[in-house]
Image 1 (tube, one colour):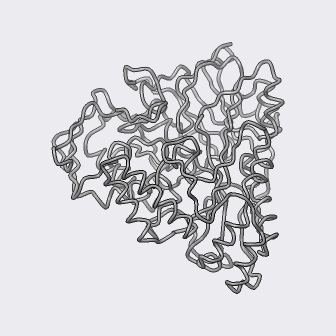
Image 2 (cartoon, one colour):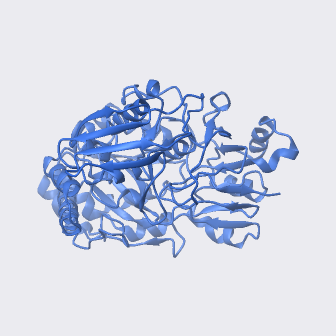
Image 3 (cartoon, one colour):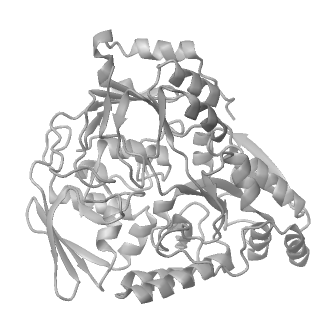
Length: 525
C-alpha cells in the first residue's frame, strides 16, 4: 500500500510553472482539483467517476440527458423507429470528426456500442434484446432487436456509464483490456504527452469541434468551451486543496471535504456551484463470490447493522447537504418507494446479531477497504466498521489509496488471496433512477458489476421493466426489483447527499448535469 502523499503549495506552484504558459495567457487556463486521482483513462473499463469525467472531456455521445432528465440528441441528427419497434434507424449529424481528423462513421459507432455494452449494466440488458446492426452508409445505421427495447434512447443518453464513441480501431479493443489510444471527438483533446499520474492531466480545446446549435443543458445541447486549456491538478489533502483555492493556484475544487463548507461560504472570492444538483447516494457493496458474504444471511445482518444518520453526519457533516432516504431509488425521483421490506436505514444491532447467530458466524474477519485519499469517501468506512462491530462482526479495515481500491475490487479471489469482502462507494442519483441504470442491480454474474451478484430473478424483473409499455407497469416492476434487491441484499443504501463544487469568483458559467462536465465555463482576470 502506498502512503498518502500530501501535495504542498510549493509543489502545486511548481506544477503550474511546468505548464510553461505565459502570464498573459493565464485566463485561458482552467485548473480543477478533481474528486480523486486519475490513473485509469478508459471510461468503459472502469466505472470510476473521475475516469467518466475525463471521458466527457474528450469523447461524445449519441444522446444526452438535459437538466430535467429528458433524452435529447447529441451526435445523432435524426432517428426513426419501425411500427413494431424492432428496427431503429439513426443518422449522425454533419461535422463530426475525431481529433486525428477522421470523420466519425457508423462503423465507429457500432463498434463503440458493442464495447460499452460488454461492461455497462444497462448495456448488458440491452444485449439481451439486441439482434444485429445494419450499416446503411457512413452516417446511417440501424439497430435490429429480437424484441422491442423500450429504453433505447435512455440507454444511449444516460449521464453515467455513458456510451462514449471511439474510433473503431480503439473500440475493437476487448472490453476486458484497457485502451491505449485516447482519440475522441469531444470538445477537448487529451494531452497524453503531459499526463503525469498523481500530479496532473492536461486537455486543450478542440478548435474543430462543432457543438450543437442549442443552449447547453445537462449532457445535451451545445458543448461550448471558452478556455484554451484545462488542467486536472491532483491534490490529495483537503486542507492543501483549500489553501490552493484561496491562493488562486487552482480555480475549482470539484468535491470539497464536508467540514469545509462553512469556511468556503465565508470566503468572498469563492462561490459554490452545484454541478450535480440531483446529488449522490452512499452504498456498501459486497463480494458475492466468496465467504462470508456469499451467505445471504450475513448480507442481511450487515444491512440491519448499518444506519444512515451516523454515516451522513460524520462524512457529509454540513446540515442541508444530506438526507435520510430508505428507498433504493433516490428520494424525490420518479420511482422513489418507501416499500423497502426489512430495510429501514436505521441501525438495529440486536436484530443483526441474532441473524449472525442463526447463520453460525464465528467471527471470521470481514475485509473492508477504505480509500484514505478520497475526502468525500474516507470517513464512511470508519462508521461502517463501528456499526458492524457493534452487531458482532469482526472487521479488518484496510487502508489504501483510491486507485489501489479500484484495482483490488476487480479481483475475484477471496480476501486472503488479495481480494476483498466489502467496500463503500457513492453513485450519482441520476445513475439510480431505475433498476436498469443502477449498477448495484446488475445481477448478471461474471458479466456484472464488482461483487458479481448472480440473480436470474432480478434480471428477469429488469427485462420486464425494459419491455414495459405503460408507466403503471414500469412502477410495478421497479417496486418488484427494489424488493428483490433488498431481499437478496444487492447493496446497502447509506443515504443521500449533495456536494457542490467550490469555484473562484472569477470563474463564471458552468453546466449542471447528472455528471461533472467542464464545458460552459469562462475564466476572467
